[in-house]
Length: 278
Image (tube, rainbow, N blue to C red; front, side):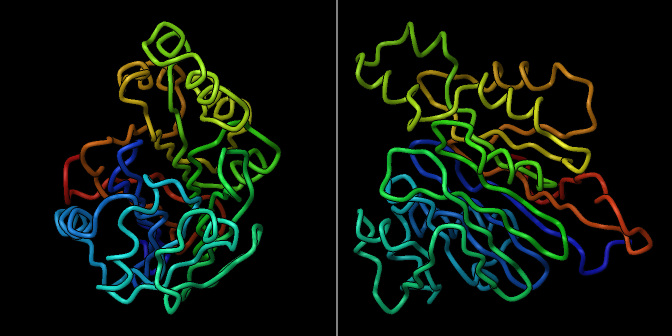
């Protein structure tokens, strides 16, 4: 039986048109990025049976518009504090009301109720990009998108997680043969760009641990990737890890992971709540 020992998570949207992820326990939650409008965030959360009243913080990974577009209205309308590092704030998120801003440093841990939000530096073409691992009673959900290179920070935090929302942005062949201009292709595939399907798959196969129960692949390119390619790649191994591909057009369902009261060790398998069919 799972009693107050669960973490719930969902993607509200995942892609270059907007990114927003929900992670929380029974009492409080955080949003990782808020790259869709306040109206759309409210609509999608309501469809999932989630409430913004539980959201006690918005954590900003970097200043690109697909990660911050909805923050100003959301934090003003719902009085939600925004956690952001100083370079990211100066780099393009200055529109956030000063009264809502809470500055953290990369590699800090911020306490939000019973949630611990660990930040860590990563490689991406932004002022001071970070990713996050959200922890509750030893359970950890990592949100790791917009990553150009699988560095030691990414590997070390990936190994600690029970659930990872991981970027799988582009198929290398589709990008190479696609219509993007040369410089944009170089930016995407460069060490400060995005993770390809193969890079994400290598991270998964080489560094997953026994505790990993769920992998959600996100931030898929509309022009240079396809969910069927990602699903085929990641489901070729017969493992106990649940694989989900997040959409750039609609939310996933709400998932949860928990620890049984009478066990000290591994989390139970991930289950999807029958709230919304993503």
